[in-house]
Image 1 (cartoon, helix red, strand yellow):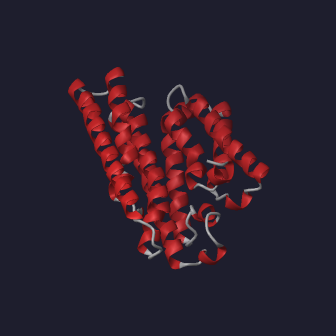
Image 2 (tube, one colour):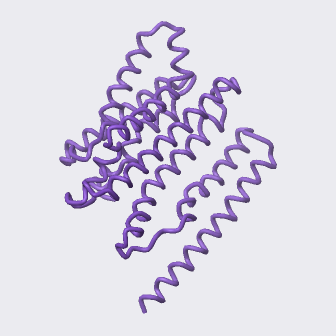
Image 3 (cartoon, rainbow, N blue to C red):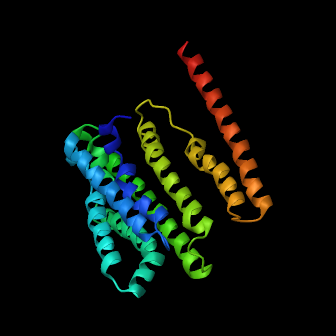
Length: 262
């Protein structure tokens, strides 16, 4: 994937926020801020170097501002405030993205719109289908970050275990991966339904990345004692079975497509 194409993806725009959500936590707050801020600054530098500023939404500049502020707080805040940040800053930043998504939907300027505009002709920018597609994708990111915030809050407030394997990493990673896949999958569905002649991708192709997570999730659960052994092994088995089924299905669809071209 070229740098220009990469920068025109809303998934990349969300990257600093996802990094902080997955890295931050007790004992890791500074690492999370540094990694997220470095990712945001690197994206801005790449945009400047490749003259892709037009595709930049508000997520990246906001990320620079938020993570700079969190870095300053981490260095200057009193100890009680620092402990609070280590526990809850991930949920705060996740809810910040949710708020950005909802605000952009309220003003009819979906958060993903600047990225999507770089991938199509200008005359399509005001088309209802184009705008509706971006509203749906923006809503999917809001749901993903809301799920991550809820998972983190459950680990902190209900389980009283902010480093719980499932609430701190696996559930949040699954939410982000699903939203990222949906961002690529749904536009193809929308174009097919508009009568462009494109083949509509099946729903099962949307699930492929989530299925791929089952195997590493089961392995991590075994290694870090994240649940009963039978549950962890079950995740691995289900992941292997579903992954093979999806690969077989993809092979059959490719073969059918080749036959149609003959």
